[in-house]
Image 1 (tube, rainbow, N blue to C red):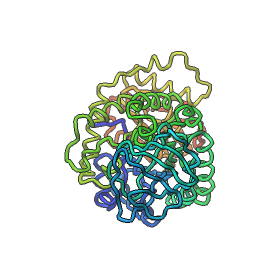
Image 2 (cartoon, rainbow, N blue to C red):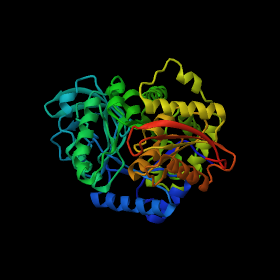
Image 3 (cartoon, rainbow, N blue to C red):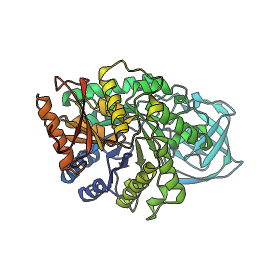
Length: 478
């Protein structure tokens, strides 16, 4: 059954074999996430090779996303691997400390003391431990434990309300960008950007590193800092898409604020013609259990109803016991949620103007297909822009984007309601349209008598050149 919402899954020890990857793709995986917070360049290279081979066996293209670690601020290591913090007791975060103990811990971000003042609240290990800053003396941050618990090596630190000065791109990230480009990734996800400048810098680095390989990856901004919220429109303008990264974001702004922010971010992304991924703990219980909780089912379904392009799995597919079953379950939830979605196409078009011919054709195809009850929209596209514009509006009419460019085919694997297919086009428009129609029919997406809306640009082969809309019935004289 056609599924509009895409599935992103992280590859890790539980899923980094060609056999498991093939099963995951067959179960509905659309985009593979390589988490550069873990593993070596050789690990990522092997996994990327496995993904490409599994996709070849499955007979469809799958996108690869390189997710940069970013300036994750962490405590250092402890003499015994972990300690126990007790409420109301003092504790020191010391930038000069090598190995921590029950009284103090080291820091991997040495400038953290410069960012803090008395009264600040620090959240460790995703908010499970809370420290109140009492004073800062040189490189020492003196705190009082508000909420204690076990603290082990390299756990993350956030400041409540945000405001830490660590740059979005570290030296490691810059090296990882070069590695990612050598792997031919389709997307680069930037962790902790604060503004548009962070994204512009990341894009420039990726374009330079990708030039020898003929690659210009699409850039994803992970919204996980409090400062990113007021700068969201600028970040959207500088990015190809965003990720609602609910983990660190929730720690900085508070859990209660995240659901409304998620809806707002998805809405703004769609209005800006950008794609959006919803991530973090979507099916967390399936790390260990063969079925999700009812709350997780509702969470995935609500993200679909909010209009997200994709839902993402992290530890569930990287380290969980049921990576394939988790994807199957998530796909089933998406399909059920999409059945109840109401199209608001007419309302979407009110008070909107289109100054570009290709965008006007895309919107015209949507409107025509929706009101004529077409079985499918078939878009011949070079860059994928036509398919992206169409995918910003929900019509229940599946969009099939056919392109001669493998890079465009992979990139469109993330767009909502878009199925990307390869088509070896020629310069003759009618022949290309006929081939496109035959491809969609041969794969079972349309049958004799179905109405199909086609879009194409002429002269063919030019990005941004879509200028023609055609309505046909399958099986009738072309």
